[in-house]
Length: 416
Length: 95
Image 1 (cartoon, rainbow over the protein chains, first blue to last red):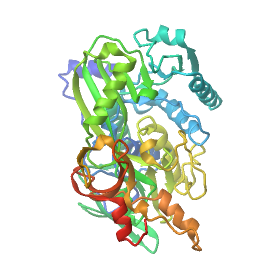
Image 2 (cartoon, rainbow over the protein chains, first blue to last red):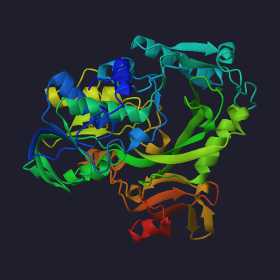
Image 3 (cartoon, one colour):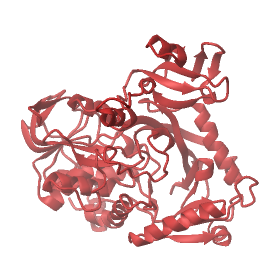
């Protein structure tokens, strides 16, 4: 069924009895051309683009829980393409362009709101670094504006501009950045993939890989063996656990990132504001809740919850830069487990095992990458060669000395 | 999380800096023939276990000792804390 305003009127006049489920609940078949492990945003996007762009529909997406039960539902919904390095920026700009046409493309309301993202700076060297990053963004076809203090004041007058330690001197503004209704991204991709023939199989946990003589021929699941010509792992957060079934060790540690939502308030935060120096970023949802977060907790964990010192650190950052939010009460806080890679950048690559592919290492930036990740992973799976914007996202880049280290902190995942 | 320091008693984990897997104690020998491969694995690849993990914590806001903490990455429960020096010596290192 195609969703439209006309459809709403039609259904409204006929008692809303004609709505059908957005996807099927199929039983797994014995064999598929491609199995995607993980029905999160990236896995579902991959299935969608495989079906839509490459005509490959004999595809199953296996999910141990329910679709969209991982980080696609646990993030702070921000989209942006304000990276710098050549291995990254064209990829994230592709993602931004896909976001811009996504709702029309998959016929689903994902509430994409390009309200802008502002990175604050507090010193001359930091402004120089932002100018450099802004130029790199412009060269990759993205948009970027370097704001001075007055420019920031016009956007958000309520910030603490005269903070003694971090006075606001300006910022890097990407107008096309913004927020998206994150669950709707999973649902939209799932519906689009399903209606093109992809089987989305929930409550089906992969418990083993079938690998014979270096060739991956399928997976063992809690619902039996399923054969496949290609197996595509897409389980960021649990990548090490799944790839260990294939005997692989990854350049990844799992860490927890916490996020917070306050009670609903009148509009006060324009767009997304990041205060990197204070480990704090914030946006305001359409319902009025302040959605904010900070840095990862910093120790290896698979528990989807963090600890109080980080909560305190995030709230201190918020109070430092925008004291007026101090009376807002927290409604909810939660944690998501992320693949922290050794250089802070992701992987979309084939492995040394024939027929086994890997997508992961998204650190805390997986949500914004969802469309491009699916687009490039589908391209790799369908054609056997990496998409032109993802040629550097290789698993062996550390061996070759071709790290994509935006922060330049080296192989210390909890610092990225 | 509370880390039960062998010398100082229970301390808040916020006093510590986290490094990672305790296997980082075992730095490869740069004189072996496949040292490049060994250093690649040492520096970049991780077991990243879900469950009991031995890891290095540095007591930066305290006595600046390195500890080997055995902690469950699924529950955050800490079951054992040792001085990293003792662990390294037990493995035959001289310091």
